[in-house]
Length: 222
Image 1: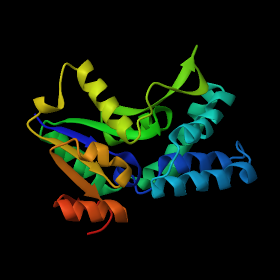
Image 2: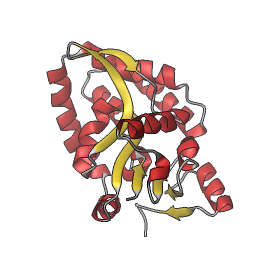
Image 3: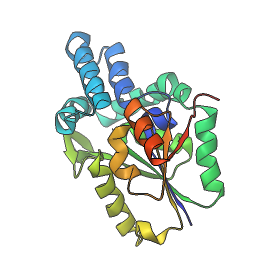
C-alpha cells in the first residue's frame, strides 16, 4: 500500500482557503474590513515569503470562531463552500486524488489551515483523513486558541507521525509515500517522503525541485 499526502491551499485548491475564509467574513460584514483586510494580506505575504509567525497568525485566524455560535459558523461555511471553495477545486485535482484512491493508497490532506475550515473541503474531495491545525473547543464552542501542535512546516511532520502511530503504522511501512505541495514551507514534509511532487510550485520550491530532480506537475495548466 502507498501513502498519498496532499497539501490543500494552492495545491488541490486553486487558491487559499484560509485567506478566502477571512475575506468571506469581511464581505459578509462579520469582520471589520479596515481592521482585518490589511492584516489578512500581511499574513498571506509573510506565508509566501516563508516568514509567517504561525502562532500570531492562528491568534488572528481563530479569534472569530470564538465570537459566534457553532450553528451560525456552520451556516456561513456552507455558503462559503458554494461561493468560494467549490469553484477553486479543479477537475485535475479531483482526478489526482481519485487516481491514488483507485490504486488503494491511504490518502490524507495535510494542511496548516484549521480543521473547521478544511474538513468540509476534504469531504468534498473524497479524502477520508485530514491532518490539520486543530482549533481548541470547550463544550462545543471554539475558544479562539489552537489545540496541540500547529500543522505547519516541521509541525506537519510531527502531526503526520502522530497520526500514523495512532493507526499502528510508520512511514517506512508503506511501499511508497507521496507528498504533493506548492510551497517551500512544506519542505520538511516533502523531504520526509519517498516521492515528493511539486505542484504549481512557488519560485523557491521550483528551484529546489529542479535541483533535486523532483517531479513537477500542474493541476491548473496543461
